[in-house]
Length: 409
Image 1 (cartoon, one colour):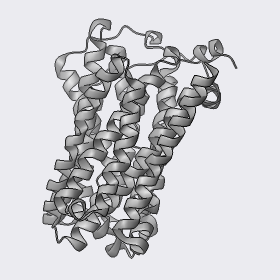
Image 2: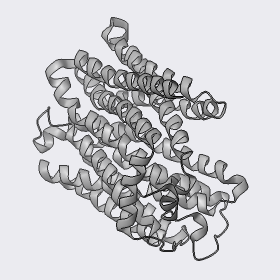
Image 3: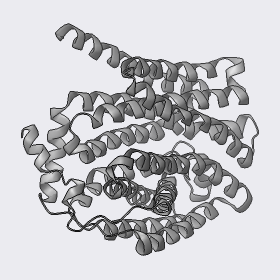
Image 4: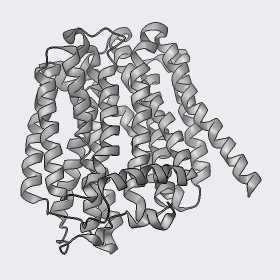
């Protein structure tokens, strides 16, 4: 399948059957709130696995499965559910997925058995991908002159949801128990369902391809674009280190530094300072410094983790600095990768984004899956060594690919 054939499988914003309604400022805020609230679902469990696992009879080594299965579910949803937005009416699809997410959260709040909770965690991740439908819909509704600004504002809401999920979860669990976290989230999702039903405009794309053809084109796109494969590999490895750190550091802080869940929440908020990397990375990429900025992020990530092997770096303040630097590196590399991937084929951006984001969350799921075992067997030094090895591998591949490109160029 050649590039022109790939492009014909894209459902462009202009393919909607009815004129796009005006996108007001209030609707932009609504989209931003919905994106933040929905994406938070996959991060609530991360800082409280130490509380959930004993109640469900999960061993300490199996506790991180809760986080990894949620991320695996999200990756599967990106790959198999998001393409449906090119085939069926968007609002109906988003409402349906939000209802499933609500039911999954309620199930998590009431589940008494480990296997059932793990299954619900997988389903929760799978049904929380409507974020990746809302953002393209906003781009479709926004006028050309302000499209970038609109999408940027909505992405800010999404990022805020990611950053606030961990501290909110820690505080609620500290005062009301871990089950209250999921029940509160289910109530928020009920409000999201109502908001989607009452305010989001309908958009029914023209059927230019079947669902099977769209899925088949994902394989072709991955095979066709070396840059996509490379950037997905780099970010997948960095996100694996990110998930490994953020799954184990709350346990380390609670067990060996004596922090309460509320204090861990403050720690997570401090770590969120690293999110300032996103706009910085965008400006660096626009200025033509993508390669240098990518190199910086892949050097900074292992450096941040290795700090934990020193006495100052192992202190609470030192671990917070690691969190800030690691968040900065991962956010920067993600934005740089997105920009490079989006430039490959504008007509296929939706599916290119799905492939890129799927690879990221597969990496995150792997990092979360090994987190408990590494921590329980090798302690914090093991987390540092495994975590730093992942971005170092990305750095090695980045340098190797760069040398090959220079040689063939």
